[in-house]
Length: 116
Image (cartoon, rainbow, N blue to C red):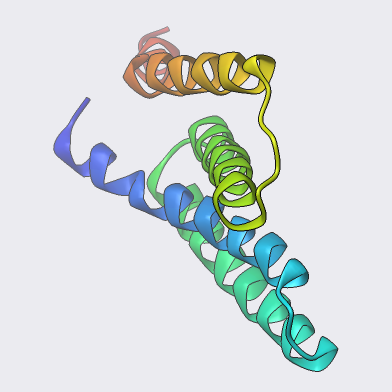
């Protein structure tokens, strides 16, 4: 993977974290107006980061990385901040998702398409 491509992964990771922050904001013990404002702010930021990730990576890489970051960070935040339980199956699924993202990010499917 080339260096520029690696830097492109900061965008979907940031998008995933912002999506998780939006989900966390809903559960905070704040005034409803403040919570909705935070959700709006984090969702707008998430979409901006996601659009930039589509410019830097393939749509598949950007989408899968965004989803994986959102899923894992939301689950871990629920565990840490809200004492939600995470099952063995959740951790197994998270590991499989991470493995899938790593395989996808190291794949050369774009090169294969351009050489045919």
